Image: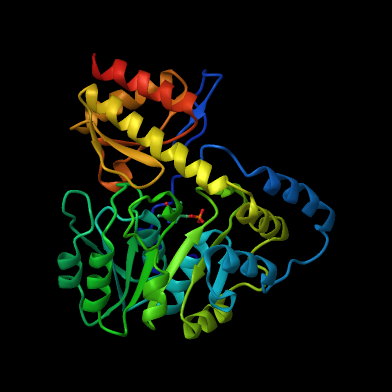
Length: 360
Ligand SMILES: *Cc1c(COP(=O)(O)O)cnc(C)c1O
């Protein structure tokens, strides 16, 4: 006899992040975790350094200054913003508070993996709904709802497919869900979207009592290493998160970095312009080389090699050149590799390497 966790814990595979080393290769280009192309904003780097002098102090548990900065930047009420140690922590708090044993969590088949891992950790039955053309299928998701369903997760744009559900479809999903089902709209890539009808989720949060929008500083703001995310929610859900949240869940350096990042002039605009240009250039070049590239609204492209053996060969070809992208077997997309849009030089190198591979 020994100690044992709850049985559902052992069904959870440990999360495998994007790799950052290749044995024997000196210069590594990491395009495996969708980290922004330009590193952290300069003002955020300075704020992190300055925060070191205050490291003996507990941080502001209420994250007041950070919530005010986010609210001002995005036009939202700071009282309805909750900050987390990465948006992953907020997703986990929501699942532990609203899901758990005896409940079902619905997501699309190739939705973000953390919903599945955290849902099973919490003891939920996780239902993955087949997609259409690697995009969430609203009718399928609504058909998967049962009496025990308590939560529906949608990443929009979705990682790793890059697909975006039009606003009318997101609204149709919400309208088709019972009022006792929480819809979590995970907009980790919101800033990158250029489609005019897109709303990251605030509209539905304001219009309903049961919708939450999650956002992150890990992607366009280049602060993945700081672990900083936030959500915007109806007041009763903010109250619940206030009960389950650790008192100092966001550290002082992360908060200072976040405040500086949202104030960095032109950062988002320059990042979006770069991403939009290079995402199109890489996609066009790979398609010209005969590869299939799925449409993406994020800072990454899902490249489809047709079968898993060819995707593995492409991955090996890239690795030998120091280029690390993300293998997709864990997502049931073994025939694909996910390539983050990096700097112009990084995009050029990965495009040339994949073009050479495709041409044999
Ligand atoms: C990267 C990512 C997150 C996690 O962000 P953190 O704030 O770093 O925890 C959440 N959702 C999606 C869809 C992501 O791609």
